[in-house]
Structure formats: C-alpha cells, structure tokens
Amino acid sequence: MTFRSNIIKTTFILFIIGLTNFSCQPLLEDNTGTEVSSKKYSIEEAFTIVAKENDVARTLYTKAIVGAGKKKGLKFDEDWEKDHVEAGPLPALFLRGIAGEIRKDTEVPLGLFLGSDFPIRKSNKFKGKQAELFAQMREDEQPKFFFDEENKLYTAMFPDFASAGACVSCHNQHPETTKSDWVLGDIQGATTWTYPEDSVSFDELEKMIMAYRNGASSTFQKYIDKTKTFKDSDIPVVGVEWPAEGYQLPEPTIFLDSVGELASEETLNAILKL
Image (cartoon, rainbow, N blue to C red; front, side, top):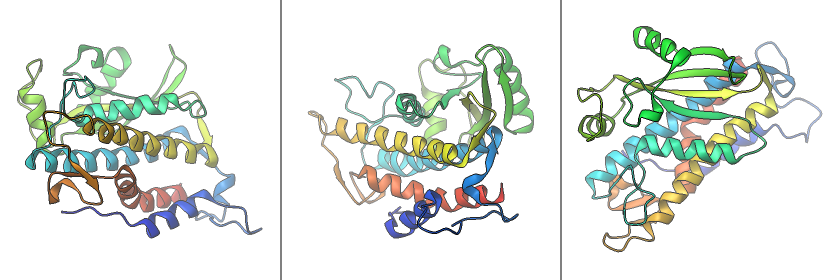
C-alpha cells in the first residue's frame, strides 16, 4: 500500500481544530452545544487522544517505513545515531526520539516513556506501581491511569502491541533479549504518559497534540539528515514516494501529513464527543 499526503484535507481539519476567532459564533460545539474552546478535559481524556496519535504515527512508521523499507534495502539499527552506523531508528527508538523532542517543548509539560516487563534495555523495565498495573494490563489489555505520588504526576499507561513482523523479529533475535518467543498481537510493553495537572483546557490539549506531531516530524527529519551522511551505503531518494515504491523515503512533511490524515478526523471526533 502507498501512503500519500492529502494536504487539503489535513489543513482543513487542522484549521477546524485550531478554532480561529474570525467569527463571533463558535466554530465547533460538542453534542451538548458547549463551545469546545471553552471546555475542560480530564487528563485521562487528553491522554487517550494523544495516545491515539501515537498509535497512528508508530504504526505508520513501523509498517510503511521500517517494514517496507527493509524489503527495499533500507537498514534500521538501535545504534543508528552513532557516526559509523548507516541506518535509521527502529520503532522503539523512533518513539524515544519523539519523547526527547517533546521534552524540549517548555510550554508543554508532557512526558512520554516506553517500558516493558521484558525490555531489551534494563533501564526500561517497569518497577513498583507501574509493574503492578502492567501485570493487570497483560490480563485485561486495558489502559491504566494513576497518580504518581513520588513525582506528583498524573500518569497513563497504554498497551503497546506487536503490530508488525518487524517488531516481533527484532525483539526475538536481539542478542540481549530477555524473551525470544514474541508473536504478532502480543503486548510487548506500554507507552506511559505523564502530566502535572488533572485536567487541561482545549488550548492545552491542542498543544499536547501538536507537541507530539512536531516531535514525530523532528525525529523523522533527523533520520533523513542521517541518510545524507551515508558513505558505504546508497543514500535513499527523499521525495513524495514511500519505501514500498523503492529505495526511497518520503519528506518529513509528507510523513506528518499522512499521520494527520489518518489521525485528525478521529481526534476531532473524540474532542467533540468528550
């Protein structure tokens, strides 16, 4: 499948979400008639919306970039940022990159972390309350919400499923793996989100969404920039086409437009329903 951007549709949806003030009438109202821009959202609701954005972006990256790219000769490695490694980030490291970019946004105190009970890196192993809740998640496959008393942060954990063959083979074959029998559909870990407040305004929710998308775009750009330094490997063509079509990568704007196209309508519907 070839993923292409739909700039007009995405721009229109983001324009609606932006809620400009050119009219004295509210541009959006929820099903109770309340102007959306004046609403407050529980942090659980906000986490759920941003987690969906993450699901879309990571699935697109895992399947359309890593999965399809490997078939065309593109390489991906956990040490991709090292100078001598000519590769892109694996899906888990793509998320780590996004988390790092979000931390740089001083206006949005949103935290993101990917952990597991069988992580490749010991530092990513769940402990304490998170370990207890993750054990429950393995049983019911449902998100978990709690308040972290130690760090004074509202926290949400969402199951991270093995959604592509690349996820399974990478973890099973890794020399430092602590579990080598993963199969498609397994819960391999959980994405954990943190925020210091128990509710957010519409503007704050919008900033959370855009912080995530900007983080995804910036991380993808770092991958593109890395390919330009390749000396022993061919440098992939960067343009409008995706790896499914050949040894190539889409521009970061194309990738982000596709995330927006896949996620924006559902995000908008979720905001209105909430």
